[in-house]
Length: 344
Image 1 (tube, rainbow, N blue to C red):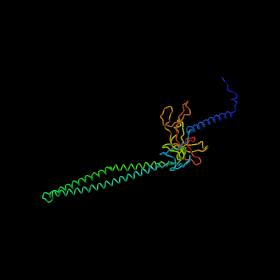
Image 2: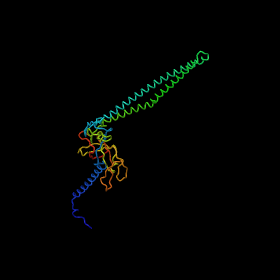
Image 3: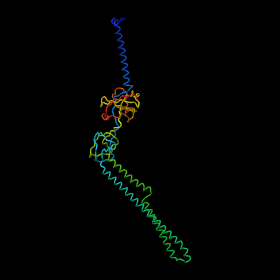
Image 4: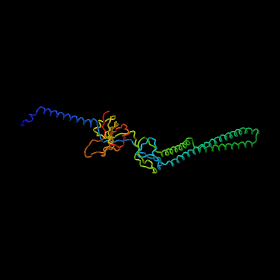
């Protein structure tokens, strides 16, 4: 059995007290460090896997043609409605003028046919009146023949006039029918005019498409065309960055997601501006990830794995809206960020 050390038993009381104090301080420091680690990594989730984003629009021509004007430069700021570039409008202006001429000719043709119908209707009405008068005369003289007030020749002549009048009525009716057939029914007329008007609208739209304007305020980037080049339909010639809505996509481990809620505030620091802190607010948390092993469906965010030989927490994207920055510290897409989420 080991005997107590004489050296230990002879230590002065203040040494033993100091040892107990240092042990207590060590325990306290350990607790403080533990609390700090919990505070930093769990109570206030933090990640340095975050990047600045903004909404973008790939601007392409809706009509093909040569670029006649390009009044902008790469990285230039533009406002909504500013002219970005002009596709040669001459062929589309010609098509618009042709469509307007066709509508005008269609309206003239329809007006002419309508006038023809009115004239045919008037002529038919006149012929019917003539035929009615002749028949009335014939009906009056036939009884008079029995009393020899008129001759047989008078009756025959009246009957011949009635046949001629009836033939005129038939001819006028035929002329009216032909005019009506040429014009068509009212629905056909309206359809012809509407078709001509739609052709004008289509030509006008193509002409307007020649003048490509900014859909929103923002910055021009990736400008890859010059005056004189040919623009193809749907082929992007530049990208426009919307500078009114900046946000950060921060990728957090899945074991931290239960401590993050929409509406929470976030502190964002950017490597571009050391020592400066930006404010943000959590908008939402991603609901799915694309997994290369086929465990989920395509079309979901694809977050690259940092290690593939160790089973690690998945990282889900958390969208954090940024408060507007000042002119001296502008945001740029792709800036590296460090995000700490805190309470409301």
